[in-house]
Image (cartoon, rainbow, N blue to C red; front, side, top):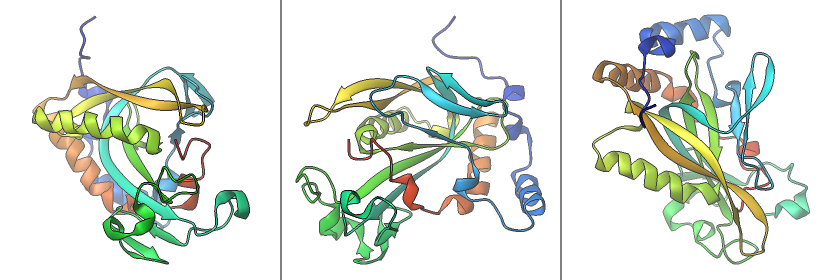
Length: 239
């Protein structure tokens, strides 16, 4: 088997559809309510250093060592709680949120880059950021008409950034390749084992496939710009 997969358009039926028609079908089927990121199946980073993903299917959850798909959209998001989770029980809504990690809404609000709570060392352990950052990948898998979401906590963000920049250096958009997501174990400074996502390009799309994947992501992108507190309330969020 070659290092790169052979990508067949038939494996990705969404690439054969008119994105506008898909959006209209969603509006009709959902009674005009539209699509939100929280309607989509979610694949989360496992806790405790697990090396297998729990993947939702029609037949229930299944375990996979690797998740393969096309990244059709990437969203950075932030959320800040003035009261630490340990004191609030983790159920309180965030005081400030940002659906682009650029501008916050709430208290304190404003530009995230200038916010003291986005600075490293501002959290309760004086190491991380008090305002939590995640990156949400919308990943279209073979056989699906809608993407799944993979939320990456801080410990996986450096690797994600390096991978996405390597694609840029190669003149490739994330939506022009099939990405493989695997997991590896690491430990934080407190000796706690956690899971970190690892990224690799598994195959390139043809020009026609890449154009269709890009159009698909752009058609659905407006619905993806939402943030919810439980995106950030995960066991591995601070690692």
